[in-house]
Image (cartoon, rainbow, N blue to C red; front, side, top):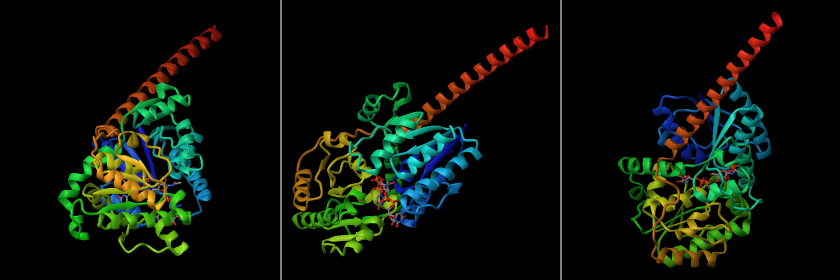
Length: 386
Ligand code: UD1
Ligand code: UDP
């Protein structure tokens, strides 16, 4: 079985890493295809180093193009590579433009698609990620749903149950695998002069927030209010999209916010695990907050991870500064029962077992059909010769 791992952005590298480790362990025939959507060292290569991943066999380097051109180039180049490599199955993960392009490319050249993190829905079609998810799910052959909610969404959209598998999310595998490693290798609190439980960690980078001046200003002001109320610094490793937009809009960052470059996974995970509170619009951070048992405030109007809200670990605050402060108070000061809805840390193992079994079954079917065809062809030829 020849497997393609298609990825392009920071969260895909992190969430694919347990699958890649599984393939290495089993010594399977695979290759990594990087679209180059993320390309700065801190958004890309640092994760390959931190997670000790092999270099991608291909990097399309299309990240600096405008996104429509990016998607077009990705589809064309990925489909060529998949054919050239005689790929049996292409794996994609999540909802980025790289995921959409990877799935479309495989679909056009009739190569099987496995989608990890299938079935998430924000029900907000103005988000590019939501359309990416829906299209990818509907053209995938095997859908790996991380939670029961995601499984249900897919069933309700009419996708055949025999194609959907409840596996958990590989983010749990990644957190378990790397937190211990991080403790052995680094000490980010010392490096940034911080104390456990005495700082707040923030990230925001989603287009629907940081591309809109009013919303970005609301988030920055809200972080300032939270910092003053708790008398704690806010540490903000900043995505380049956000940094660019702060400059473009001429916004002032409140003095209490300590902005850093985006951090590597080992440093970031340690920073999350020791924080008092997480304030974010990131999908991955909402999940990691549940896994690490850190209360979370999500600065969005909706989430495709409603399990985190139902579990009482996360709250939606939008981007109004006062609402962010109120939400932070209610999350940091209330008692919680911790539930991690994203699985037991063995999602990668489950995904490969399922994919391997299904492909073997299909091959057997194919062989049976082939031998039947040969038999029928033989008897027809015999009759014709008589
Ligand atoms: C993308 C995903 C988003 C995901 C995020 C993970 C889509 C539609 N969005 O958003 O769902 O949460 O990745 O971080 O796919 N940039 C750099 N250097 C980089 C990467 C980006 O400078 O290494 C800047 C560029 O100006 C670029 C902008 O950030 O134009 C946006 O990057 P892009 O990859 O289009 O989207 P993200 O905001 O990263
Ligand atoms: N992350 C990181 N360094 C940072 C910010 C985030 O390693 O400076 C990790 C974080 O732990 C999570 C993932 O990146 O696993 C989330 O990526 P991001 O927020 O960019 O994307 P999203 O999850 O929203 O798609």
